[in-house]
Structure formats: structure tokens, C-alpha cells
View 1 (cartoon, rainbow, N blue to C red):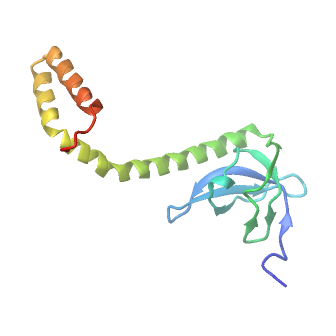
View 2: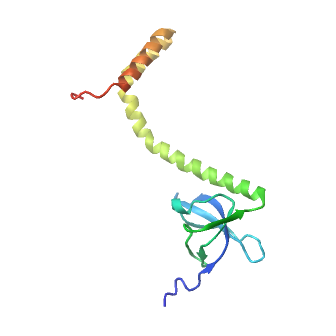
View 3: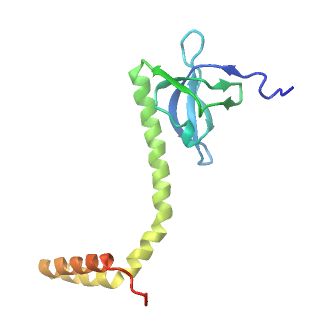
Length: 158
């Protein structure tokens, strides 16, 4: 008999958004609805795209124990949590975590962006010189030349 799933109970829960663990991993946050209609403490579980739901939504179909949740990906939306202040707070926390992960992504792309800047170094120097001389026509012409070069198909020699 599998004791790891014996203590699981089917309970309704409120999805309260994504959170970041201390290690920087993404997880989902839920609060189980107790029998008296109040919410339990926030609980975090492993993130997957399928377990990402509407913030403040009440869901049914997952089973919970003290330490695990099964079926967070296959739940049914019941209705929205009625307390708007709670939903606003959960959304703010969710958005903050989303911003944190977008920032990490942008920082990892910074190396690739600097490679592009290196490739355009001579064009950037010329553009800066035109800007210092207030040569708007020259700046526009250089911008058009760079765009034309970007749109041109690659040659076999490249």
C-alpha cells in the first residue's frame, strides 16, 4: 500500500499567484479553503505552466496532504475569491515575481545585446559624430542605411 498518497484529501483552494523561493526558483502559491470558509496559510508548490491559473480563482480537483499536492494542473475553476483586497495583494506579489524573473532574463541577454553593440560600433561612432554636429539629415540617412543593411538578404560570402 502506498502511504505517500494515503493522506491526500480533495480540497478547494484559491490560486494566489507565483512566488520566488529563497533559491530563486519559481513556484505557485495557493491557499486552501478550510471547512469554515477561511483561508489557510499560503503554501508553495513546484511551478509548471499548467499549474498557472487565474489569480484569486477558487479551484477544485487537486488533492493535498501536509507536504504535497497532486493534480494542480488538472483543476476546474469554480468562481472568484470575493475579497477584492486579497486579490489585489496577490496580484501585486505575482507581478513583482514576474518582474524579478523578467529582469533575470534581460540580464542574461545583456551579453548578446553587447555583441550587437560591438558589431555596430563604427556605425554608432558615426551617428554620435553626426549628432554632435546637429546633422539631422545625416543621422536620418545613417539610420536608413542601417535599416537597409538589416533588411538585405545574406550573401553567400557572409
